[in-house]
Every structure is written in C-alpha cells, then in structure tokens.
Image (cartoon, rainbow, N blue to C red):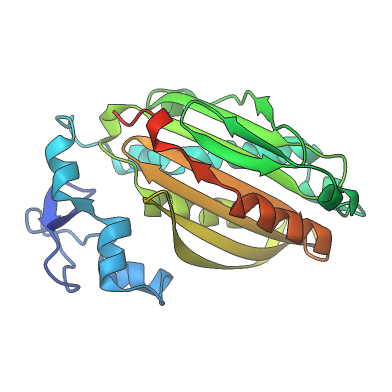
Length: 278
C-alpha cells in the first residue's frame, strides 16, 4: 500500500518510500512530521507504524475532497489543537481557578468501584464509555476561528464531588481541513498540558492504540499542578473527519482513582456503523 506525507508548507503529497524522507519534493522545505522527528517522540515504534499513524494512504488521498488553498501555519496550529483547547477549558471549569483546588484532599471513594457502572454512548459518532454515573453534556465557548472548521462538537464530563475526572470530546471537522492529523492532536495535548499555569515536572509516555481498527494513541503522564501531584491518561482516535478523545485525571496518590481511570479507558468502544465519516 502506498503512503504519503503531506507538506504543511505547500500541501504537496510526498510518497513515503523509505524512512529517510526529510524534505518536500516540491518546495524543498523540511517536512515537520518526518520519520526521524516522529521516531524521537515514539522511540519504540517502527517505520510501518509511522506510515499507519502519521501518513495518508492512497485510498484516503483518492477519496478526499478537492482541497482549498493551503491554510497558513497559524491556522494549521489551531486546527490541530482545537480538541485540546476544549479539553483543557473543561478541566479549568471543574475547579475554578486551579486544577489543584478540586483535587486537594479529594481522593476517589472506594464506593465508586463497588457500584454498578453505567455504559453509555455519548455524542453522534458512536463513542461508548463506561463510567460510575451518566456523563453530563457540556457546552463550551469556542473561538470564532475554531468554529469555522468544526461542523459538530460533543463534550461530556463526569463531575464527581471527589476524586477522578473524566472528559469526552468528539469532533467532526469541516472538509476544508482535508484530514484529521492524529499525531498533531497527540502532540497538541502534551503541549497544551505543559503550558497550563502552575504545571511543572511534566513527563509522559505514548503508544499506539486501536479500537475497532480505528487508529489512535494513548498517553500516560504525570506532572505537578501548583505543587500537587497529578496523573492522567489521554486517548485519541481518528477516522475520516472525526476525532474522538477520552481523558481521565486523578491525584497521583489516589489508588482508587487510578484503578477507576483504567477501567474507563479499557471500556472505550467506537461503533463505526453509527458514526458519520463523510
């Protein structure tokens, strides 16, 4: 199968024949997501995984709509990080001024694991997750330049009084973006977390993760938020113009929260028959 790496400077599709593709064959600019750069972020991944996760297939190219004039790099930045903006806006709403405010002395209750969890489908794109209680639909303000490239966004959260938090975000982008950049969403999540006020000692790992043959990633990380130890698990999946993201956050010394978070992530299902990929 033929794979392509798209140049963000001129939009040219470069055929990926080897791991040594570094520069665009049309404009001679460096390809920002070349294999060498990608490998540094994913040291345990192979060249074949790079082609699967970071490149376009010939079928995807043939079925993609006619592309408008390439957007500026600034626009590309906002496209890649739109989902992350919404996730962290929601996180901020949980505790007011600081994530630390709602974590402090609020570990997850053991009762969470003993109760019967609810398996629900959230949004219009077939994402099913199991949580202690039914997730609540949110309504987040989006900057105008983000709204222009998102056809639909469904945000849900599990807002417990104490303990771990769950956020679900499903987006269907406008065809004008061409395709969803999965690695861009993964990198954007990390960059946005590092930029949050009060965040220090940030560390994470990333692996490929598939659900129902839909490519994705899973990130597991730790950081300090205003001196408080925090852990998180962040997952993202994309197909066509749709991107799904499920994130759980809990206090670093919250063992019950850690167990509950893993249960949420393990329960993720995506029903491709109910999702709209055009």
